[in-house]
Image 1 (cartoon, protein in one colour):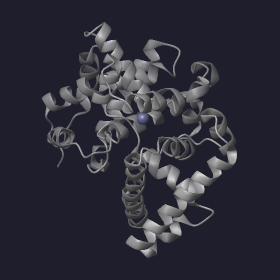
Image 2 (tube, protein in one colour):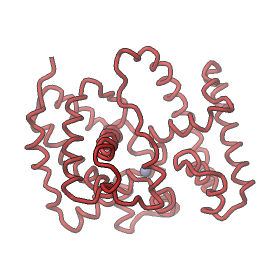
Image 3 (cartoon, protein in one colour):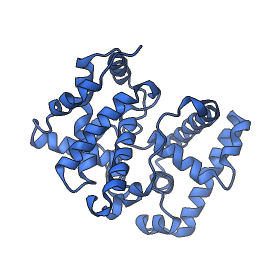
Length: 301
Ligand SMILES: [Zn+2]
């Protein structure tokens, strides 16, 4: 039951860490780096041809984080925020250096690399306009979480896999049918019923928000919310248990699905990092990132 939706749950330790960093604490900054550098590096390494490129990207990500501290929204997952900055840095590098920098994306993770990274925190100019959207996203996130819990409570894992592949994985009905070896009409039916349920939930909770789920927009809106809030991503502790082979069913099978079939790049990065930690606890050396970024740490006013 606790296996999923880890990265989104508000993390008090992270909130505290960021508050300390905003006050200029070097030890908090060192702690953040040692906590997150491994998984960021694993993410970058999977997408760059050289280790030094990957390290530069992670370095730029940490500096970018310090420079955007004023815009950080503590209600959002710190990990997801860092991954988002990293993806921006990757895009920048790709644009500058062009194709041969990136290794051929594996088929499974290619979908993710085609998605333009989500917005970083919105500047104040458009804040008022974005606020409504943010409220709608929060509501939709809550309702989607209810829907996902409902599927899990009923052990309707196939239905859950279908909608995860569609909304999080961006797959077409046909591909989902092939991946799960079920009928394409069944896929369409599951998707249709899921959106119908969401529309019903929204009408009950806040009828004025129903517009965000109208026919033309529903799929995109749900996808954005699911990806941004990483509704079915795995807790790091769950990935650790999976790695040790001590995760119980059905969570183990579901974890395998999220990693192998959905090929979630952020959970794969966490898994890669955990594997590296297991093999070589001293790698990577977070101190390098600390030394090269600490100069950008400044006291907020
Ligand atoms: Zn994930």
